Image (cartoon, rainbow, N blue to C red; front, side, top):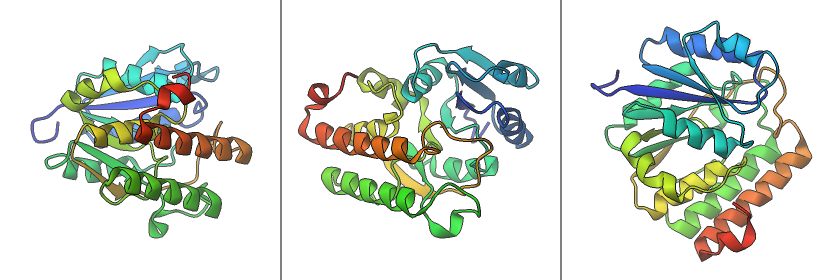
Length: 241
């Protein structure tokens, strides 16, 4: 509980078998999260066995895609405050306190991984990924007149349950560029948002997206096209959402 509010944590998993148990235990050790929901999105063999050794709830989502997993998690969560995080051990569980500290004033709190003094040695945040995220974030900031933004790909975030319930009918992206869609939709719906720096560490295992430079570049362009389409209100013409 935090200020008498129940906290739910969503951990979507696809290729995090070797780290997910540690991440769950790190959050459990904080004794502040009330429920941990693992969304198994056709995850690697052995993932369920790792989750079964913890107190987390595992839910199977067969429709492939990061967006599909997160939206399923939002629907299943029962907390007043919902935290989303990657179970690849790139984030510090204790940074949840940063998100919660803003939850009294903000409807949505986004993390950013691009602040140089928060990037750990070995983290997958080279100059291309870092400046790519900053550039796209600044485009979003300019087009939608938002608060200061420096990352569109950070998955560590907090949202109030009543807010996400109102947003869900408008969220359509099922794939890896769900994150910026949620950001843009939140600003279009006039929610109070802020972005704060998060510690970003070396990943356990290899990412199915950012571990491949070609896939990362393609994802970046998909994010750009989506943001422009949402500004012009023509996203349905560009993507099969």
